[in-house]
Length: 366
Image (tube, rainbow, N blue to C red):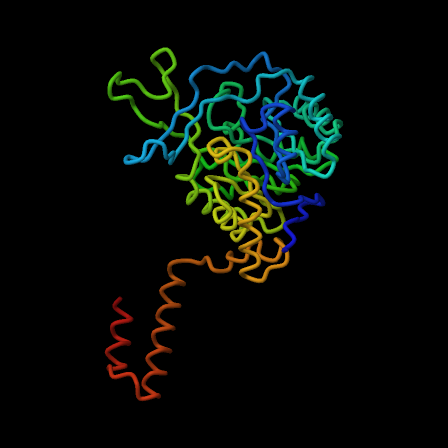
């Protein structure tokens, strides 16, 4: 059997599959159950110092389904906020989870306001529980923008660099910065985080969206007292966008680890993120839709892929597809060169019946 473990930022993950921050890691009980099922790591639901400032609404989820099969979810929207459970309770549960599963990687997702002292506190206290790493949520696309939290921070490279600097100064464990996709160039904030010393980058968080309008009530969904707000889009529909941004971030920041996510539901999905530079992959919506037990199929599928290609370790193929990405101008030149070489070879062998001059002219005008 291939070795599914991988070392990232000095942390040994039994496998690269990590439950992402969100409902799947909503409390200590579900975190322990997830570890027992075999997940290599878990990022707990994002916590902040004062849970009394966090109030969720119902309903807060919306689905985009297949036109022909309404049971098949293509995209998923949520307007759920970060954890509304007490910070002190979270500290107790994080310590319990780590003590019970010392060989599994437990990562605390943290978010705070734009104040250095609050970031220092929310770094120091969770890391004292024994968690393996911290993930700075600089990318939640909805909720709490009035407190300059989440994507309100992550869209500004200067703020990203400042906040990551505060966190790194206080941290004694690896720090990952979670990137927002709701920006034209994802490499700007990523490079800022790396300049501040971030060990790793997580990408992507959800994409700001409107899941749809109810054509009977004419109200946006999910509808809360007749109203709604744009929320975070996830699920298989976002995977192509996530792959592109993970690729760009991995290429721009070769000295930082990358944890990729966005629409991962199968081992084949996950492998694509590994090939474009991610060392670990995170799953959230997939686990919500298919159950936490999906980890068994993910590990089996990854092992089968590795056996088929002769890879003995996951690290062997992390980023293996990155050199295959280039510019359109380079693609044009590569194709011209390939056609000329093919034309010349065929002519020498007496197999090519066309006119080389005409072929060359057509290449210039294509």
